[in-house]
Image (tube, rainbow over all chains, first blue to last red; front, side, top):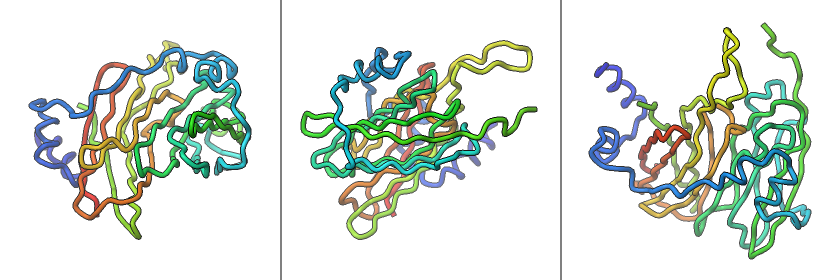
Length: 155
Length: 103
C-alpha cells in the first residue's frame, strides 16, 4: 500500500514537503471552506435558481462568451469555455436548465484573476446552458443551447 | 485517501495559466447500479485555488460538473517558482489539497 501511495505521489509531480504533511494529516489545509448556499444548489427549477442567486433581473449581454459544442456526443463530459468581457466582473455561475441539479458551479475571482473558466459539465439531455456574471453590483446573463446525442452507449 | 490533484501552472507574457484535474466521481445521486440500488451522491462542493496563500478562485459546485473535474483559470502576474495550491471538500467531508510551482 505504501509503495502504491509513493507512486501516486510521484505521478502528482510537484508535491511539496508541506503538501506531504497535509497529506499525512499533520497539518490542516490552510484554506477553511465557507458553507455552500444550499438554497441555490437545491433549486428544482431554473426560476428558483435565479431567485436564489438574486439574479431575477439579470440583463442579457453580448459580453459573456460561451464556447461549447452545438451537439455533444457524450453528455457526461461536455467541454465549456466561458469568458466575461465586462469591467469589474468578479463572479460567474453556470446553470443547466434541464439537469436535476440546475446550478453546476459558482466561481468567485480574486484581484487580477481573469473572469473566465474552462471546465467540463454534465448534461442529462439537450439543454440551454445559462451563464451569469456579476460586475459592480449588477447581474448579466447569456445563454447557449447544447444538444446531446441520445443513445450513445446503451448496453 | 483521495487521489492527488494534478496541477500545471505556467507564466507567459505576464499571465499565469493554471490547469488542474481533480480525481473525483462527482456522482449525481441519480444513477442506479446493476441491482437497481441508487448510487449515493458523492461530489465536490467547494474548491479553492491559491497563489502564494492568496485566494485566486473560490468555487462552489454540484454534480452537474463532470466526473474528474478539469478547470483552467488565468491571472495577471505570477512568477516562475511561485506556489499554487488547489484544495477541495466533498459532500462526505473528505478533503484534498495539493501544491505545485509555477513554471
